Image 1 (tube, rainbow, N blue to C red):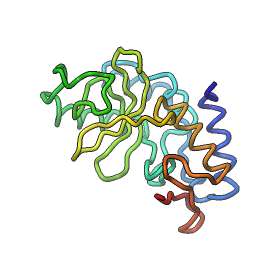
Image 2: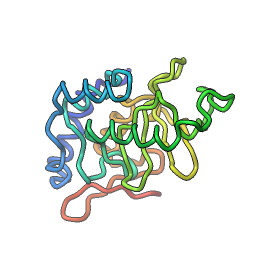
Image 3: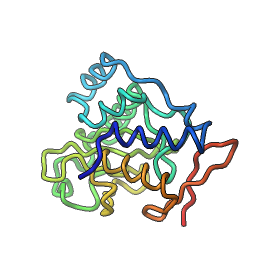
Image 4: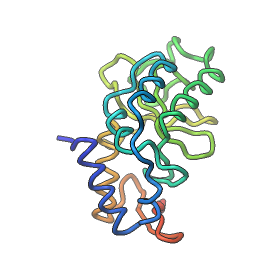
Length: 194
């Protein structure tokens, strides 16, 4: 059974505090419940429960990468902003066509039921797929040049699974999906791609 978001955050925070204090210090304080509700209104649906739980722990990671290999968690305000930007860019492309099969590895360029929660700082996002299907809640990578892809590794099955895999690889120092945590740049967390 996948640990809860809170359990994984405790493990991540403990590791960061001891090994990557700069990244630990960059963790934002909790989001306000009212800001989370406002983002849901902008998006037109409530944010997924695991994302709400994560935002109530840390409202993003600022400019520091946390998730392998180079993802920083978005603040609740940035979640709504990225969603709106993607809706403006991709609104008329592919959504509702035969290419919008939720069981496929590749998705459309964008979908209104995708909730962005992490960014690489270069225009790409990690999203939570909220389309009503059996794999609802899985994590995908929305690449602005190549479209959206859903990985097969168990860490991409949900936000709780991704946080658990991140905590485990930090604690064990063993690579996950070819990504190895490293501490550099004045005690900041980074990821080496093997």
